[in-house]
Length: 220
Image 1 (tube, rainbow, N blue to C red):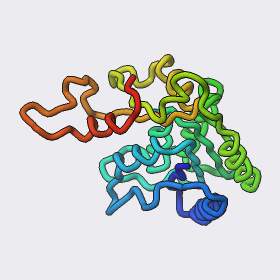
Image 2 (image 1 turned 180 degrees about the vertical axis):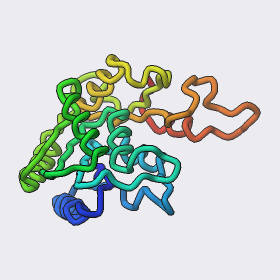
Image 3 (image 1 turned 45 degrees about the horizontal axis):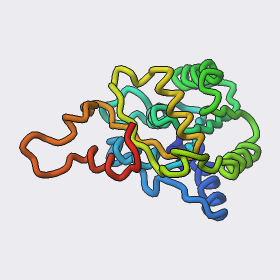
Image 4 (image 1 turned 60 degrees about the horizontal axis):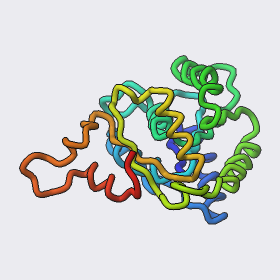
């Protein structure tokens, strides 16, 4: 399970989730902070998210720290990366009488798109204890791989044109694979998505994204 970074007011609750799930035998990632000297480790975040069955996100009273060179806060960025990876996202936010305008906009966006992404987005507000129980319920209820590809394949590398990253059919394919219990990896933002560019010209070394592909049991 991937446990996203949160704001300072919710670090205690985040640590509580980590301790309780680790105590139940679940692996919780990332092991270290994804923010080093103000710089966000996007590659490390993608790897941790891709290896997780579900992602958990906590939103507090503020929008959060904005990493160097970014326009969005760290919690916002990680939410988007989990969506791009087609992961089941469990999102909890505290009841607040006054929210940061950017945070309010983010929560409104998530609420407005919940039906569209109902298979991959669970919004929770209110009881934190109930939210923790729902995390365990989702992890326990993860479907076993079905017949065919799912029973043979342990991971999939999904190649697509960056312009199609928001395509509804692509997202549906993501959700289908994730719901079958198959981890899905995707190229990082800004990489060349054409397979012929995955090996640098004149290089005897495999490009990092090619090595990542070869670690998967199938490429789509």
